[in-house]
Length: 394
Image (cartoon, rainbow, N blue to C red; front, side):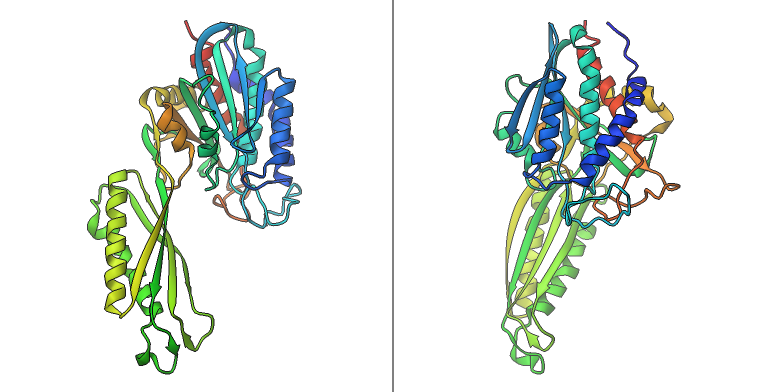
């Protein structure tokens, strides 16, 4: 088998990756609207001789690279969608689609996926098995992974192992975050509606104020994590939306709270929702109001399997060095969990922070950007992990 120097290969394609990433950055597209992006992906894969499928999960693209010898199927996933954010980065390649921005690095992910496809295509004749390159739409909370699964992305052929990565600005460029077991939290949304009795702001005693009840509910919910959950568990309960009233001197009839629950444990998730409902209904009753709650499950926890995680860790050690690997989890969420629930694999993070260049802003921030050298690390590590199965097979 050829001994592939994936770092050297990625460095050779660095300028090409940067150019493509910056082009994609200028024309971001929202989930399930990635028409231009998916067209570029499909065209590039076709030129490389891949078997290409379009329209998987609406705007998703799948490229299959199959070697002449039998072996395992490795699935590599890259997301493509942007976010509804007005960009403030000030970069010359800033978004030209006003109100839409690549504020999470998916432009880099797509560019890395195409670069790795180009590298692996060079070694097709030496491959045992096949690599399934999956370019996913609508990762940002719209269910792109679920849509691709529903369209059969995990069949014909079914993957034996799967990998995905994310450029991560909480970590410095040149570092890699990889951890066995849960690495990202399950995420769900809840909406609490408090029904009261409106009235004039000058006569609050004649009303049942849903705003006061809602404010007490927000405060009470903060005690769930501190008083109902084992301190050794990781759980988040956050309220991100509070809507009530239309003017300063009118007590409204209702107030609406919207929030999220994050955890690594499905049983805890159910306990948290039971406590939210109990607190909301009883607190509302204490103020003469009534409360109802609706919940939406968005994604499940991203859980890395032991074997594939060990492969990624070994690859990362080779590319960046053992002292540059960190083991930390995050309460952020990702729909890669749907794939990992079906196929064992590993999801890892490639550091993209660079304070000297001003790449310090968090994901989903209007000034978000990352050190593009992170793409070299990502391509090289992903390539090493895939090669473990299809180029180094006995």
